[in-house]
Amino acid sequence: MPFQHIGFVHFLMTAVLACLATTSVRAGNRRPVPSTAPPAAVTNNQTKSNSSMAESLGIQFLDGSSSSLIIERDGKKYVVDLKDRTIREADAPESSPVAHPGEIASRFISSENTQLGARIFVEKCSVCHGEGGRGLASVGTPDFTDPKIQAAMADGAIVESIKNGKKGTVMPSWQDKLSDNEIGAVASFIRSLDSSDPAQQRAAASEAKEKVKVYTAADDYLYSLPTGRRLERHGFYVNFTHRFAFDPAFSGRARGAALLGLDGFAVASFGFRYGITDKLSISAYRSPSVIGRPIELMAAYHILDEHDGYPLNATFRFSVDGQNNFSKNFTANFEGIFSRSLFKRAQIYVVPTLSLQNRRLILDPTLENAPPALPGINSFSLGAGAAFDIRPSVALIGEVIPTLVNGRALGIHRPAFAIGIQKRLWRHAFTLGFSNSPGTVVSQRAGTRATFLGDPSADTPSGLFIGFDLMRQMY
Ligand code: HEC
Image (cartoon, rainbow, N blue to C red; front, side):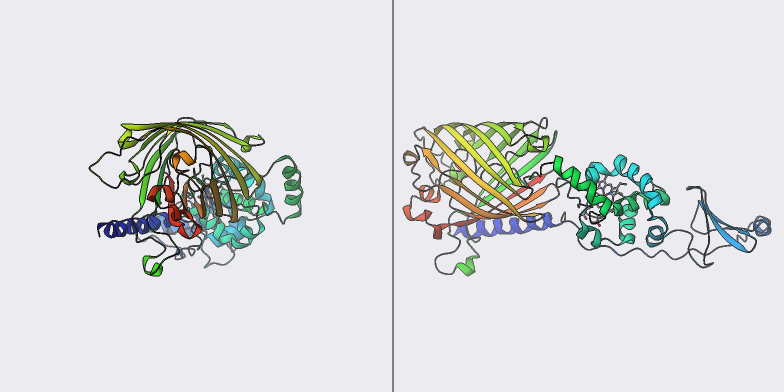
C-alpha cells in the first residue's frame, strides 16, 4: 500500500527534524576546562646577549604569552600583564602566569570587581541575558538570579563560558574582546545576581511589585490554535505541521506496531511567517492535496502585549485561503487572538474566528484531480486554549475549537480539540499532540476527522490521532 511507504518517509523526516532540533538544545553538560600546559619560562638561545641582558635585569619572558612577563626584585617574582596593566606576585614559581579559567575565577570573583562587571554586563551581555541577568526565553539564556542556576555553575565554568563561548549556542567567545580582568569582573557580577543573596533579594522584591509576571508563548501555535505571540521585526519563521489523521492513535489492533499511528499517512502542512515590524507580520502556508491543497495568505497585526504592561495580548489576523493551490473554494477569515497570563507559567487563549464562504472538510486524495467545487458556508468558531509550563522549557497545551455558527452545515458535530506537550528551545519549538482535527489552515482547523473521513464515529476520544508541530525562527 503506497500510503505505508509515504508514512515511513514522513516518519524518517520527523526523526531527522527532531535530530536537527536537538542540536540547538541547551548544552546541559559543561565542557571541561581545557588544560593548557603551563608555559615554561624560556631563554632565547639565538639572541644570547638579549637574554643575558634580561637575566641581569631580572626579567623573564614567557613562552606562549605576548602580554605578560616576569620581573624579579629582591628575590620575589612579579607577573606584569601589559594588556591588563596589572602586576601581581607570582606565588609559586611553577604556576602558570597565563591564567586558567579556575585561576581567573579565584583571582577576580570578588566584590571590588562587581561594579566594573555590572557596566560590562549592561553594555555587552544584557541583549541576550536580559536586564538584570534574568534570561530571555527567546534566546534561551538562563536566569542568573535563580539560586539553582547559580549552584549549578562553578566559578571556573562561568569564566570558561565567557572566555570560550558555548558551543551549539549563540553565546560568543569574549577572549579577544575582554581582558582577563574584565572577564573576572563580569563573572563576579553574575555571581552577585544570586537571589538567595540578601541584598539581591531586597532589590528583587521591590522590582517584583512593579513588574507583572508574563508568560511568553513558545510557538505561533498552541497546537492548531494560534497564540498570536509577538514576532521579531525582520524575523523569519517556518511552521511545519503533521497530522496523522488516518489512524487513531490508541485504539484498534496492532497499535504497538503502528507506533501511535505514526505508520500512517500524514497531512503535512508547511509555511513561512515574516515580521515586517514587531507588530505587523505576513505569512503563506499550504496544506496537501488530500485536504484540498489550500494555500493560505495572511496578514496579522499585534496590537497589545503584556510585556509592554497591557492587561492582555491582542492580535488580529486576516487571511484568505483558496483550495487547489489558491484557484478555487476561497474562504476569507477574520480572527481575534486574545491571551492573558495567569501567572508566569501559564497563559489562556481565546480565538473568535469568522470564516466567510467556508467549506466542508472532505478527503480528496487524488493528486491529479482538483478538489470539487463546494458550497461556501459562513461560519463562526470560538477557539479556547491554555498553555502551562511544567518545566522552564516544557509546557502542556490544550485547546478546543467549537463551531458555534453553521457547524452542522459544515458537518461538524463535535468540536475539534487537542492536547499536547510543547518543548521550547532557542528560536525553536516542538509540539507533540493528539487531536481529532486534521486541518491546520484557519478555515479547516475547526473541522474534524469524522467530517474528513466521512465516518461519524471517527471523532470519539478513541479516535484521537497523533501529530506534531515544528516552529523554527530562521533569522
Ligand atoms: C548573542 C547572545 C549572547 C550574548 C551577547 C552573551 N551571551 Fe552568554 N549565553 C548566551 C546563550 C545562548 C547561552 C547558553 C545558554 C545555555 O544554553 O547554556 C549563554 C551562556 C552564558 C553563560 C553560561 C551559563 C551556564 O548556564 O553555564 C555565561 C556565564 C554567560 N553566557 C555569560 C555572558 C556574558 C558575561 C556575556 C557578556 C560579556 C554574554 N554571556 C553575552 C547568549 C549570549
